[in-house]
Image (tube, rainbow, N blue to C red; front, side, top):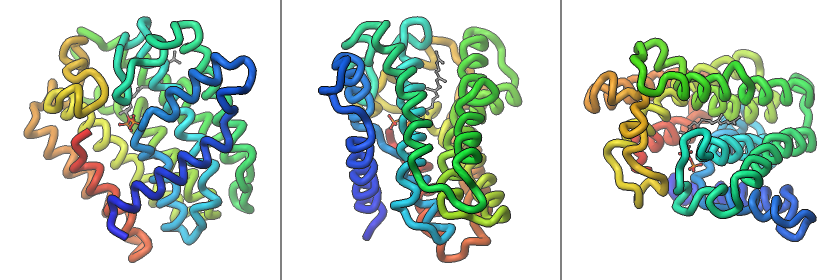
Length: 293
Ligand code: GRG
């Protein structure tokens, strides 16, 4: 199967599992469950769960065992997007090619839909398989840390506080590591945990995720200035209008592309220990570097 078909097939598997695990639109109170379904099934790329399943396979595990963790991470990711779009945050009208959650359901319900997805993530993770090296408590600790105030939320805080101010390259690198790379790394680590990976394999995948996650956010910064709103499904040029610290703003487009390329090569070098089993992760890293939206 070529990579594109693989991506479609895995995204479909994730969608079907999320459909099964999330409360249906008919569950009372209907408004909140409609709002949750609206954003979860808005056509996201499902990159994080795709990486979770690929990491599990690289460690000799079964993708079926990694599905819970992948869906849990996607719930955290979707919550962060709903909250990020709120008027008190980035104040955006468009996400995943549709009006943002608060534009359709109002701010109160959008805040609650994000809150609910944040807790549903742990409800889902707790229902997945536990392994001898990584019992449920270890998996829950893993996701809670990545989504907490030292990483995902720290990145958002520094992003907000940095608007319109001069940011140093090391501050910018930390913002990107915190708001994007930490959750992406956690998606990969949870896949490895579902396969009961050895500590050495978990470490190798952590290094892979950290470099890949930083490269992913740099590409996101680049796409914000080079792509159209239609292609991105979210408002293009937002970083420039909000005077945000980004790699293109600090280093220019050409150097930013080079940094993303170097980080991707570094990520792929961390996969050496996996041999042929690391091929899918290597190919995913290449496709994330070349992505256009
Ligand atoms: C707690 C009030 C409150 C808010 C939290 C933590 C947070 C808000 C926001 C996270 C920051 C954020 C949105 C980082 C950007 C990460 C990123 C590149 C998102 C886009 O990911 P894709 O391209 O999106 O994978 P799709 O739509 O394809 O899933």
